Length: 220
Ligand SMILES: [Zn+2]
Image 1: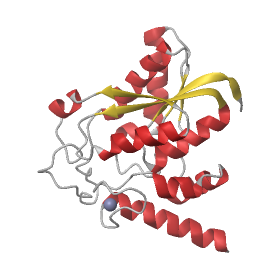
Image 2: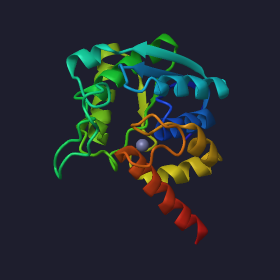
Image 3: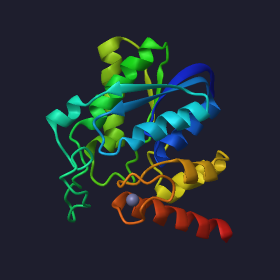
């Protein structure tokens, strides 16, 4: 599939997944821009990292104020007093913000439309979705239809990581020739530590386990 003459907007947080998606999009589309949502993240560093990566890659970058989300639904990603926890079996982790992707992807599509772009790329994954309902493929497909009905446009929501686990996401970064860039420059850690991270939080556990698994497979 090639969209060489078309424009895309990538929903971008400066993390492993969305940075890999950014590289994925840069390989496919003639013009790529990135959009980052400021929803009052505890770690403002996330916004800095996103801006830095976008600048380094020469990608047009916009930060949209979505701090309203924090008024609606305070959670562990935005409130210092709520500690990040993984949640019990069958329970949603407390980093879950209800309807976040519904809002983010809708805003991203409207922003894309303003830029004359019909492609919106997001790093959601059903494989690692931790029970977040709005990371599921059926949700994204349904929203795609809804957006097109709402605007009479022909948006295409792309989810290159939908069926990949963390190991395969590292593999994709490697295939795009960007493994070490993603490893060193991105920020996934809930404690705001770039690259290697704190090694202790749920996000670091997932990221490290996937990397280790990929390296093991690669050496074989
Ligand atoms: Zn961490």
